[in-house]
Length: 252
Image 1 (tube, rainbow, N blue to C red):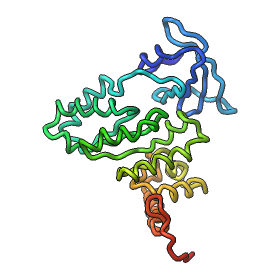
Image 2 (image 1 turned 45 degrees about the horizontal axis):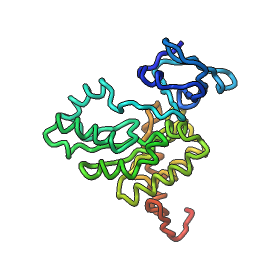
Image 3 (image 1 turned 90 degrees about the horizontal axis):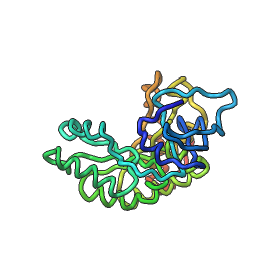
Image 4 (image 1 turned 90 degrees about the vertical axis):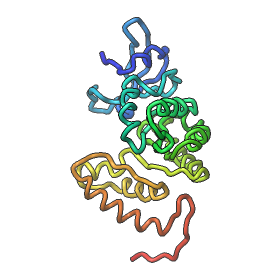
């Protein structure tokens, strides 16, 4: 038995709904509901099995949850953030109403809420569909950036569509003059083990089209920053946002 920190989410699940755990490591289907919660059947797991660990994320890709994006803890945190923070990262923002909710909460706490930047983390299919409205609501009142949160987003929309959707997000944000953070497991193997894969190096080359790249913590994070600076510094002579510069080729 596992518990969810937002029991309201479990209450809204219906039989047949899909549930993914720990960024897609374990997949399950809701088989039944009762007063204690939901009964799930595991349909997907690594060949050697996997352990259910505390503090991991849950995704419900085919369930449109009716939950406030601001929890009670978030509201307590805003009491401090409104006084001291330069910007706020907004997880699982999905609609313009979610943005307005945060703006209203900041207005009641901060002297100049329009000076606090907002990073809208795009993590669901609903957020992808509503991104233009999210941008209009947020950018009209405060500095705005968008994070392409590729871990949760891939689980929510399916890994096969991630490459296509992140391209669309980059196009929308470029058209709106909104800076983008390229996030989730960038150089992840190198940060943890000190050796990068070929796929990771290609990934950071593609990341040049965003304004910012986010690294996770790890033993080799300082060295990873040096690799990023090297690769991105050369790639920016080839690409400006989504437009190729078509500069003269010189391999060395």
